[in-house]
Structures are given as structure tokens and as C-alpha cells.
Length: 611
Image: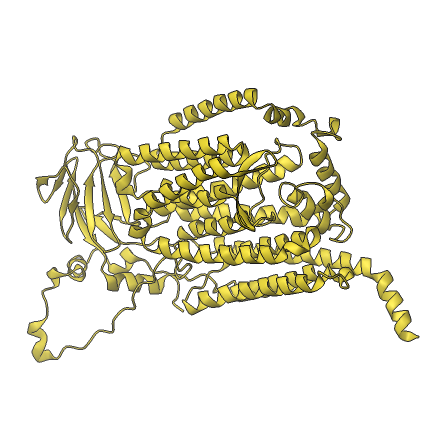
């Protein structure tokens, strides 16, 4: 009797309890975002110092990157405001083998190395004299021991905001999301839902365990990605629970791509060498897609091999960024820029032939980002944008169904039974979900075509509330803002260009998806990164995350960057052997020792406490 009464009470209280659960999901989401923001943006950015250029009057310019431009322009890393120095005069670069070189950019203005004119790149030795426009600079690099001491003083992420605590909060959020499916516990798919969420949680903690094993202490970007993937699993469980195992496989593939790309980017020389093979493979894949691809929803952007189907354009994104990024020494050669322009035009042209104009637009925005970072030529970027707009007008003229999307734009409520059907239903579902959502079981937008891909922002809003959907957008914005901050301290222009281009892709793709679904932009049919259902998109997003992490130079933050070797313990030298010590002038340590007015600690910073 009592059990029956208790059962009836629980049945009547279930809607309220589930509503409270969704409110708690939003609260936990806010906690996760705040903790990640405090960890990412809390400590002051600590630049890595790889040496310095000293002037005869005792002044010095720190080498904060592996690639440093010298000139009079404001954008130069080492700005020498002398009339005789050209805007971009020379560059001092080092490779992963610790070999430094001087690159004369403006040979007409004159670059001297130890009194001799140079017109091609030349290797540098500690103490070498570099003359640019008559200004004498002396080169002093840091050695391995100094780099290790600097690293030991720098602040490591995770000291104030523990990633472990944030992951516990995310795990609780995943449990509450899973609890939203308890009304369907008697469904044949409920066990699959439970197993999928359990596997996702295990993957999250497993990757974090790998980070700790490799002595990495930052996990904010991955935490935000796993939060978005949790929403993806919730949408898939409500829309098509039979596809959950495929989504789990896509996440595993994405993590494999993430780790693989991280290892590739770990070796800058290898990453640069892979640009050509990656571009060739991407070109062949797009050509194959044009010839043998399947047309779905108007776009011929799918390839089916037996039971497996995928979108090649999603994986081409990774090759596109890898081919577009370049180290500073390669930016001096115009042929590299020409190659990038031609490859970008080929990719965008192929996507246009497939009628995948939404993805083509994403590629074009990424190209504009790459072109601007490589050249800094804003007028040329404006001209290319104008030319693209003209080309888009021609496409609209010859592609009537594209023109229809612009016709319905901002008029969805006038075409609710035709071209505005999806947008009007999405806005109705968002309004119906309210602040905390109606729950997966009571949502109806999932019955509309492409709801779990193109309209997924509306589905998240309806099921878990408009506030949680906005937090999903905020997670990607946080990643993009961090990239803009960290890219300025990246070791190489390769990492700066790659990370900014990847962030541009993710943000612009999110903008098209969200604003297109609510009729603020034309509906283009692109996915919401990490959240929309789809194996190709999921795997590619994890690959793009590797590029974002490449610009993170915080100490022990990412295994994309190698940790410096530990400082060797000095061995005491007996007094009778003191005369056998090496000449201090034969090493970098000697150069620093001979300059008491420039203390080593001042040069290489007094960072945070070591762990």
C-alpha cells in the first residue's frame, strides 16, 4: 500500500523534479564556464624569452618568439624607431634544433653580420654583431639550462582552479542529463543511452589521466569540448538513440585525430613538411567527391563506402589550415602565398560545384583570416571580399534554390508552410522551451527535418532551455577569445595562423548555424561544432581543437609543446681543478656573466612558483 502511494507521488512529482534537474544543469554549466574562464584568463600572460639583442648603450630587446621581425613598423617584434631602419628590415628565427638565423628582408637597406653584408639567411652565434640600418645589435640566445630555469619559474595552469574539480562538476552535469531520460527507462534504447554516457565520461577522465601522466596541467579547452559533446549525446539520445554508438565511435575517432595532430604539431619541422602531402590528399578527396559523391539535401558532399558514409569537406578543413599556416621564413617567399591562394580557390571552387555553399563560405572566411595574418594587407582583403560577394551574386542568379533562401530571409513567418517552415518551427520551439527547457521527452522540434544538425540550437533550447543553449555558444566564444590572447605569445607564426584560422572556422560556423536557425541569417545547412549530430563533423571539430591548443604556451599546458629538460645539478669543482674550468666566453652563460648590468633573472623572468 505504502509503495503504491510512494509510486503515485513520484509520478506526480516527476515533472517538477525533472524541471529542477534542468535548472541544475544550467547552474552547473555556468560553474563550468566560470571555472574555465578563471583558469584560462586569470593569470597574466607570461611570455617565453629565448634570448635578447643588446645595444651598445646597454639597452636590450627580448626575443619572445622563435621568429622575430626587426624593423620600424609597429607590428615588428623588435621595433627600432630609427629613420635609417626600414619598416621590415630583417628577422631573427630559430628552428627546433636551436639553430638561430638572420634573414635579411630588405636587402637594399643593408643588413650586416659581423661587419659583412649578407643577402641570404645566415647562421648566428652567441655574441654576433648584427647591423640594421646602421644600428648595432649583439645577439645572445638562451641555452637549455636557462630555458629550463625560466620554465621552473613560470606559473602552471591548474594551481588555483583545479581541472579535477571542474571535471567532477561536468560529470555531475552528465549524470543530470542522463536522468532526464529516466521517464523512458523501460524503452529498449535506455540501456544504450546509459552505456553511451558512461563511455563518454570514461573517455573524458581517460584523456585527463593521460594529460596528468604527461605532466600537463591544463584541461580547459577539452573540458568545454566534452561539455558540448554531452549536449550532442543528449540530442542524439532524444532524436535517434540508435545512432548513439556511431556518435561514440565518432568521438573516439575525433580524440585519435586530436592526439595525432597534437603529435604532428609538436614537431614544427614535420608539420611544415606535411603541408604539401596534406594539400594533395585534400585535393584528391574533393575531386573524388565531385565525381562519385552522393547528393543529400541538395549538396553533393557525401561519400559512401559500404555502410560508412562521411563528408570529405569536414576533414579537408584540417588540411586547409595545415596548408595555409606557415613559419615566418616561408612568409618571405611569395610562391608560398601563391600556393595558399591557389589551394584555397580550388577548395572553395570544389565546394561550390558540390552546391555546399555554407561550407564554402566557412572556408573563404578561414582563407581571409590566413591571408590577413600572412600579409597584413587589409586593402587586398577588402578587394577579395568584394570579389567573393560579386561571385556570390552570380551563384544566386544561376542557383534558384539559393535565391529562395535569401527570399525567405527575415520573412520566415510569411512562409511558415514552405521555405520558412524550419526557421518558424525552430523559433516556436525556443519560445516553448523557456529558460530551462521542456525536457527530451516532451520536445517536438526533433520531428522536423535536419533538427539534430542544422536546427540543433533550437533543439537544445527546447529540451534544456534557452540559457543552456546560450552557454553552449559561450563555450566556443571562450575558446576563440583565448586563442586571440594566446596567439600573440605563440612560438611560431605557424601556430598563430593555424590557431586563429581554426577559431575563425568554429566561430563563423556557429554563427551561421545559430543565426540561420532563428532567421537572423539565411539558413545555410552547416553544423553546430561538437553539438550537431554527425560523425564527420564531430571528428573534424576535435582535429580543429588541436590547432587551438597549439597556440597555448602556458607552462605545462599542452603536450603539443615539449617540456624543457630539467636543469642539471651542478657538480662541485675541487679548488685544485679550478684552473681547468672552461672559458666563460665560450658559452652563452659566459656572455650573460660578462654583462652584470643585465641580470639573467631579469632577462628570463621571475615567473610563478614551480610545482
